[in-house]
Image (tube, rainbow, N blue to C red; front, side, top):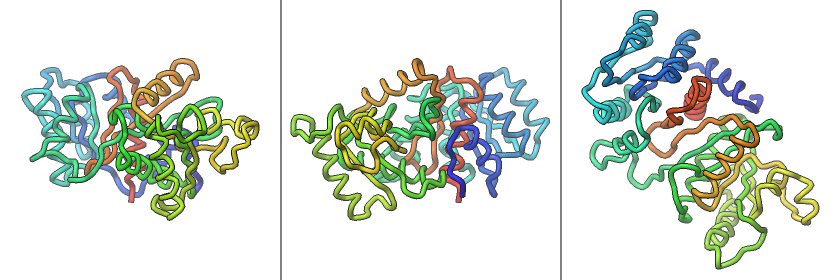
Length: 304
């Protein structure tokens, strides 16, 4: 398999899957979400459950009329009921992917995390994975966690790495290179995450994360620029060639997310992992292409 190295490649891989993913879209009542759905339907890439509390369902009705075998509409009374319905379709095995439309992420995740009717298996960790395409970097760059986990514990770091590595493997990257991000290369008890980093590297040496290479602590520049590592004398296969960045906390990851978007012209796709199905959680302000990339990520990451 040729590794996926761009978001366009990711969408193309999605279109060429042997199976047809079933997607439950909660509140598909905005133009960008409708555009993403319509694009998929035009190439018969997915089957959609569209769950809507909107009184103005003309666009949705038109989608069903044009693609009666690929679109099912579920009408509910409120946004929260829409979230519950989407989660119930996943629980019942009637959908493979949950996607956010014109609904707050908090409302959707409340249904996902419900103790009795949610879709987070006991003991699992919910985490956000971002895939970024940057003009200045020769391949896709994954990073976690920019949206869900405020201050990762060691078990949460372990889960984040496994999720990201699994996605890289689905992308055709045989041995993903993982950089554990800090502002320096030193382990220091004043920064407890650096102690966790030492444990994570030991676990990687034992093969606990599968076929992968892990290095750190290191800063982002060292992880993505080989010259910086050479100047610092850091000997690690990760240096200058990272596939995955694991950040110490949400503030750092989210700041990185917004900085590369604004100043580096990055295009990004993101999903929440750890539940019974991947959850596509684009911003409500994202355009149709961005939402399509997120959906492609979820479908390719979980393809059998």
